[in-house]
Length: 358
Image (cartoon, rainbow, N blue to C red; front, side):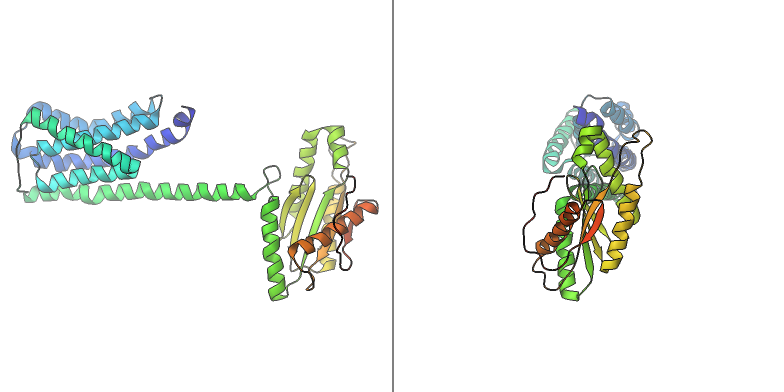
């Protein structure tokens, strides 16, 4: 019920409102022109005016206030079809107005609910025809006058435009939702950086580009020193703030083409394309100093330092994993040497990561 009240249900009701106003308003012209020669009773004219002018607003408010707006709007669509069938029989099945009304109703049902809604709408149309035949009598008018042709033109032109515009807006909204969902699947929720899998995919692409085009690139692995101690001393809320602080510094200090991610836990990763070793060292030293200078007035004893391992692309590297392994070894070499420093990988590394305490 909550989803219907706050999401899909209400948006569906609002999406139908304007097309219903336009469709029934211009449909009123077509039906009025078709039934004018048939001498309908006064109550039928009152019903026609209500259906064309007031019903869109009544239906909107009815669905808006319903416990389940989505289901209420589907009921309204069935009633639309019922009245469509009613007026086709009332006009004695005059060919052009009949086809115009029924096709527009069917188009609306397709857009609103697919095959199921089309079937329900068709059944309602038949019921409406039978109801009109019982109340107004039966008849068959196969001649369409020139006035009736002109009366149908607004329905044949304006309503498809209105419905198409609504579908276009919906497609734009769905594309935006899809884009946001795609971004969420690639992004770490805490830091806003690329998540582990997304960054590894980019590393593979960068590795292939370096191999094929002989491009320079450096990767960096960044570890927050003694992060477990920070969590144990100040709490996980502060720990999360530290992670976000580092991610913000990365966003501020890296170039547009650099690609930063959260590798896992307190470890971050960066791809620096088109970068020499000395440039990468300077960039990471600046990052280390900025993070090291961070002070929180509410936590004066909190200190943050970084250990950073760097590895430049080399043609003899066998795989992205091998490249990453070199940066990993450089990082743990920095940790062995006392932490709070930047260390560059030196030479070919074939050993696996060792387990060092945080």
